[in-house]
Image (cartoon, rainbow, N blue to C red; front, side, top):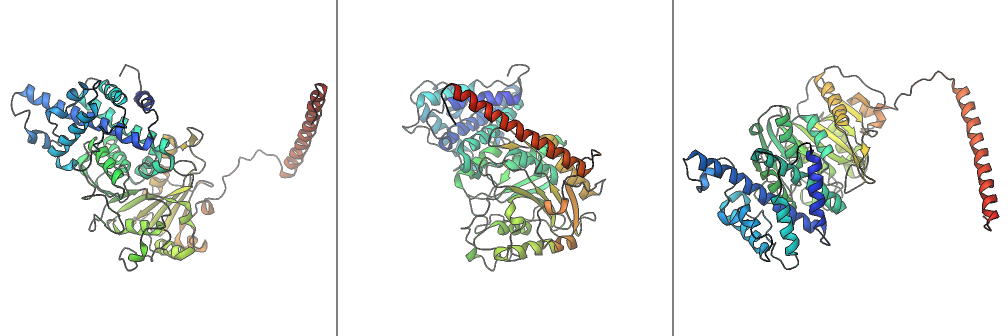
Length: 504
């Protein structure tokens, strides 16, 4: 990458080039073509770095598989290395070469078995464009060290995930949570060390941001243990690849599985849970789980899984201060249908709800449904015990295009620091219109409705010193003058149109 070029600019440029090669292929299909190639480039580059190191050191066998697996590096047989693949970029057999490379990499690395998509040789995939993609990724130049290249490939992978989510619209939401939402949750609960669990992990974004948080705070990624589960088989594979490209070890279960009916981590009591479960799912099979021990606060309704997700997460929290940050549709804050109100009340009275954040609209590619963040904790500390913090962040953020809003780093810091200061007892103050601490008794007076707007009130307006009666009289006069001017302009327009033979 040329000096002065920003990483984001580089990612954008690469995306535009890759997207141009998409032609008429659906984003959902093209996603696997592109992401598979990025992954293949990554594992080959990681292998090559270690290979050259062994060669230079003069000890050890550079073709010994164990030399690589010992350092969490995938072993790549000769025919699967990128230098071999790029030789075939202009050949009609490029698809078969890539499929074979993925096949032998899976065979040599147990953790990748059944993960890689091997259908690059299918007739409907344009081999000329496929070869051009190979050339595009061959020419990634990001600096002098392989470590820099790994970072850029990881970030390219994440960036491409977000762009494909945008291109796929509603379907994209099944595998990707917008980065600003993930960063907000991570900044609030600070998963510094211990077990991190996501029972609806999508493509693994929560884990990647958690690892980034640890690095940015001079911690060791090896101090966190990652556990996840995902029901969609394609998305489960994306998560495995997304984590592998960052060298993050993770237990995502033996296979893709439904968290409610095939819990892959039954005994797990995690210190941190981060999740964005699917909203308002009606066909979750609750009729088969009526006596489930996870429903400590009440049996969830058959027609909506929201409170099943919340109780599933609480069930998996460490009783000694385990904390959960999750995203949920706003309806769960106030719904009283089908036992939801009772479950919510029991959760508040059970003192596991710690903070509710009302988020701005239009944050998701997949839905316009307004959402909130729930922070739940087992074993609250002295400053939050018996209380809930409400934050109304609906006015924050900025539009990045006509459809999607995004939170800035300052917005995220404002939300996270407010919560942290309150939870730790370090200088928190209620701010009218933004944040309010409420006791369980105060929440009971609101029938256990958890909508932040009910508690924080309306933002204070600056007093300009003008009396209300005088301001109303002035504004009424100004409005009347505007109406008069509007009528005058309409008459002028009619006159000019009449002069050229038009009447309105």
